[in-house]
Image 1 (cartoon, rainbow over the protein chains, first blue to last red):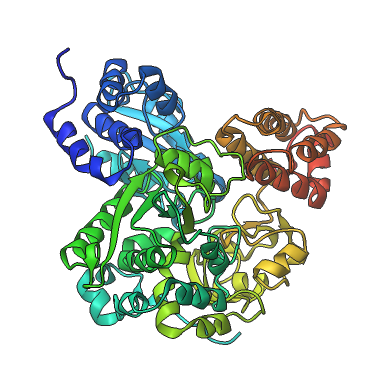
Image 2 (cartoon, each protein chain N blue to C red):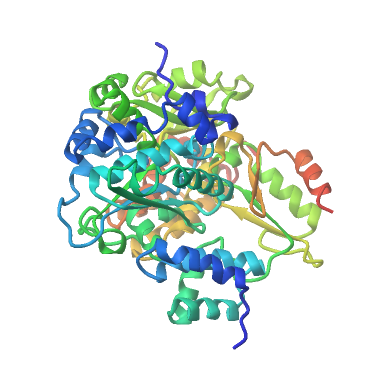
Length: 157
Length: 424
């Protein structure tokens, strides 16, 4: 079986191995690293993670499907995760979602046909003092308004 | 309202992050030196004297918790920092991790010595990508200077510290779910007993403490438990509290106040500048979204653990969410309940089925399709979840439902009778 995950993946894991008393404990870090390489977790990639750790592929899927940050289907180049939990709702998160749905012509959970943007509603991001907040890929953006969001998105094209 | 001690807040700046600042301006790693010369029992004793109560939400006395760790154990012991910060409304630990990461590292070193652990993990919520990176940079600095690793400060004490990222699950803030997640499993809470102090991470005796709890340890060791205890204005809670304020206030943010030194009214109107747009106050959620709601006439209560318990709510993670008069409370409760339905791990039937059922009812209530009997039904479902699940998520979902319906019944009834939201 040719390897889907890079040399870097295996080097990172090698570094982490002595940090844990069991190899299974590497599963979450491994899935994060695998997703960093592919943007999501294709089945064959999860199988390779299972083989590396030495567990059944079903065990990897059972864990991957439990956590919302693991993408089990492809996402766009830019993944917008807008927090719509209490504090953000009190500060206008619903308007942000509506604005994005209109702007991209998609609903939350969908990806634009050009695969550029995926829109998602997120639970509390822990940035409630600077609400409304969202994540754009790995980065936080806070104190958002539809205007500030537009400016941010304009810079991405 | 006397001035509060400021242990954390003045250092919440970008400049404070590095080791040079920590050593120069914050007396960094002096407490570690002092603690390594103390016996574990003496440290635990100091923690007990400090009246430090866990800052994650349960408010359990930290010294007592550390004392539960068996002295002799055939299995390795672990110290785990709960940096999941997933309770909606809470954002204080993020500031500690991004601005003063060495406080947390030093606190964990002292905790490790006190409980006899040579391994520590910081379980940080997956979304805090930047904070995890900053923590790792600080950990690298500490290793380079010999504060972490083998034979620390020449004392023979060893301690390794690893940042472990979660991946998006509220339930992993529950300590046994967190431990399962650390072990590479689904974040499902465990049956207790055994408690983590007997059998926790990798079946070894384990202590799980919140970020703020551990970050305060160096200051407790430097200044003494009694000093810390006296900062608290009430008998049982020591220290300062980092309070996360969000929602409809003019100045939201993290505030540091001596425990028990303000009422909620003072916090909203004096500290946070009052309600946005000078509107009237409608409701306050005082301890993260799990805390039963308070109405506007209940805010003269002192903001501390016991006073809030006495009036049927809780301080939780000290996250205060403020709601002004023009936000619909039915909509608000629906949003809160949707969250718990989404985050239920699914192990316990009352929580898995009940939360979704309550969400559905609240959905139709908000849309104006509610029925007269729905309020009684909501209370009945909440009652059948409360106290009937493995972990506190069930109670966390039930508390808001019963308190909102009880305190804002007229708003719910107006939706049923009017067939729509009266504010719409």
